[in-house]
Length: 167
Image (cartoon, rainbow, N blue to C red; front, side, top):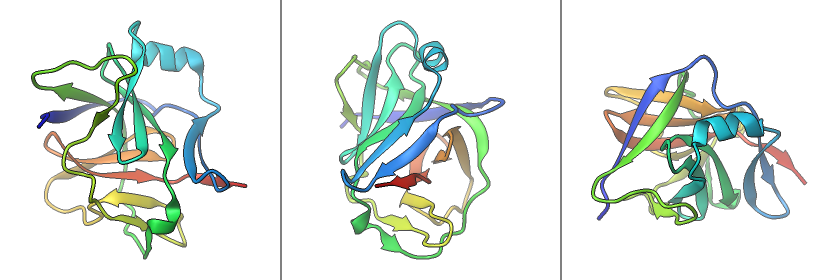
């Protein structure tokens, strides 16, 4: 199994754009972002994806920086419940792999998350994929508008997204 670590550093603001949910496609997309900013964050070797089932997180191959989520992700399977929305720090998140490299266009599964639960707060519209109980040394980093990851040490605990619904 691939060992995947996530590290982060503070930044002034996360990647700017608009996270949307296309109800007719059951898909998440990140639009209206600056191509110049994305190119600066990715480097010269293109992009790949880390996967949470059919949801993907775009990553710069050269930089290892996480950019934004996209892909098929039907919200019907989310359990509806009130979530305690964590404080989110603006930052950049980097993925590090042991024994392999990121390759342009070759997606990689994030280990141990295929059976993660998904929760949707009906009042705030935040969605948590993974552990929503953020206790014990967890830091939540917002790396794109309305997109954050909860990290404990260098391990991913959950992904938090708040897409705007579009028909």
